[in-house]
Structure formats: C-alpha cells, structure tokens
Image (cartoon, rainbow, N blue to C red; front, side, top):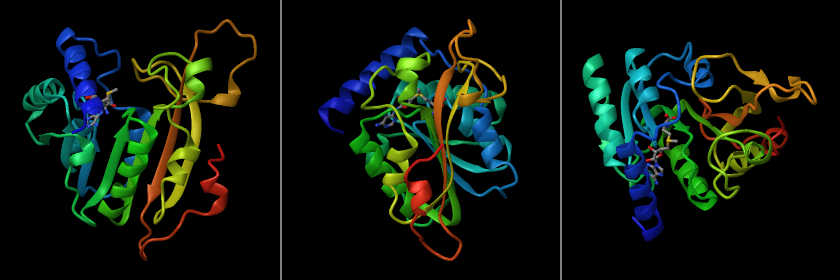
Length: 234
Ligand SMILES: C[S@@+](CC[C@H](N)C(=O)[O-])C[C@H]1O[C@@H](n2cnc3c(N)ncnc32)[C@H](O)[C@@H]1O
C-alpha cells in the first residue's frame, strides 16, 4: 500500500473508532433493485465498510466476500454479520492489492468507494477481468454534481464519480445503465427521484446526487460499451 492510501486507511480507522458513520445501515435501494432477479452466485463488495451490502447479499443467498482496508470497519462488519448468522467472508485489504481471480464473480459492487480517479479506473479494469460471463459490476457513489448542488461528503472532485469516468474505464464490458440521480441523504429507505424532477427554487432540503452505473460482461464474451453509453448520458 502506498503512503497516501496508508494515510487514508488511518483516517477511516479513526472515523470508525469515533463512530463517525453518517450513512444508513440499510442497503441502497439502487443496489437492491439492481440485483433483484439475478440468481445468486459469488459476489465481491469492494470497500464494504461496516458491511450493509455484503450482509444483505448474503441474506439473499449470495456467497459474498466483503473487502475493506480499515480493520475497524471489518471488525464492525464481522460483529454485525455474526449477529445475523456469520455468512460473509471478511477480508482486510486495500482493494487495489486484492487478488481477483479471472471470471470468478457474478457480481462486484463498488459503493461510495471514493478513491482518486486513476485508482478507480485501475480497479474497474481489474473488475472486468474478475466477472464471470453475464456477471455484473454495480457502481454507485456521490456524483461530481453533489459537491456544488447536493449534500454530504466527499467535497473533492478528484474522488467524486461521473458516469463518463466509469464508462471510459471500461475496455471489455457493456454499460447497461448509467444515470445521475438525486435522492434524500443516505440515512433511510426513501425512494429515489430523477434529478430533473426537482422544483427550481424550492425550499426543500438538499438532496444527495449519486452516479449509478451497471456494467455487464456479455454472455458471449467481452464486448465494448456502445459509444452512446460510453459518453455517460444520464
Ligand atoms: C463511505 S464508506 C462506504 C462503505 C460501503 N461501501 C457502504 O456503501 O456502506 C467507504 C469505505 O471504503 C473504504 N476504503 C477506502 N479506500 C479503500 C481502499 N483503497 N481499499 C479498501 N477499502 C477502502 C473505507 O475504509 C470505507 O470503509
């Protein structure tokens, strides 16, 4: 692990020690919708934090590995999982150092893993190789628009997402969903709303603006994303 990531890991450990976890325990609705109907197989949750998605997936019958470089988050996740039946394999590792066997996973999830763009691009490229045929990569996190128009962290554009960034990181898979969505801040189960539906000038509290992308490794083998989707249209 390089110096910057070691520093970042210590910051995350300190946050977890202080109990500074500002997001919900429940899985994000987009993740729940995106896996609905997929027959369970092997799944990888990269930057799993305290494990809300990994634990949810395991409860749906998936064989899940949750990975995070923060020992503190893995301890919390393990404990939560133990209370619910201890089904997830928890791994303390930097996601960029993780061995990902080729063609091994039906599902890979990256949720709110805000790392520098060059690292995210490298990670996504490795995920493409690790998907089985027909397998899906689901990416969700704060959109760059969230910095000016939304609410919550992170506040730096060099770690915020865009659909374009993720589509451009792909060389082998197909984008089947790419959107920017606003929703109430991540502390509950409220429904999502398309960004364009908000009333101009309304006094409503600020929404959280997310990037959502679903990528599929085509059943017939690798294929490039169509240009219309690679441009990150919302
Ligand atoms: C905002 S939390 C999101 C947790 C979880 N994915 C969720 O949606 O609830 C981001 C997590 O990414 C982890 N993380 C950040 N950079 C990482 C890296 N390079 N390798 C592994 N984990 C990392 C942090 O420790 C933290 O737990």
